[in-house]
Image 1 (tube, rainbow, N blue to C red):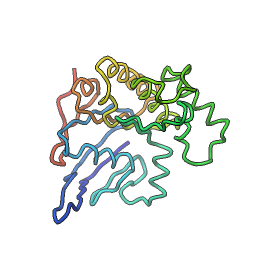
Image 2: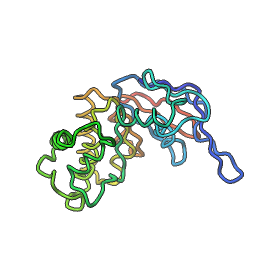
Image 3: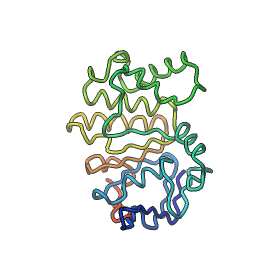
Image 4: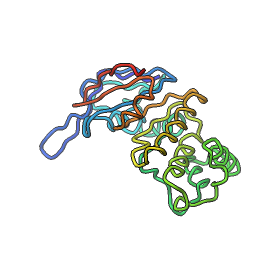
Length: 226
């Protein structure tokens, strides 16, 4: 699925050059659930951006299947994001004036899917995360856990092969965290997705098949989970 070869990413910060990724070599097979941990500023978000076709490396190659994300143009990267990758974030990123169903529909960035089909698929996606009866509610009428379920439905409605989650439980209490992780693990198994989760929470990371730690821009394998 993913093959990263000698990936380096540097940024100019004033007169200083910051190395966010430093010669990363990494393979993530299709269908694997991976947790990425590490200190703030260690490179977690930058690595996720590479996997999500949101940025290109300064040097090295990032491949998703047959697509070389490191050399692809903006239009090709946008197509990968629209077709292959779903995103879930800590902050939900829902539009407050749109209903849950309308928020899910925003995943369809172009007009290739007719509006009636968008509505049908949005309602089906909400049903798959247990929110069929909340489709017409605004985000402000939903709990934090329900809002994250809407965000997960939005990520899944395009039927991606990859789901990338950046601190998906970071703003939730412990009980709701566990509910969201049960949901993510369930859709990962049912849909045979590749699931990559960035998290500071070791309880979340222990649920993954594989755990990575990134610090100083370098990736290391952690011991397998029990």
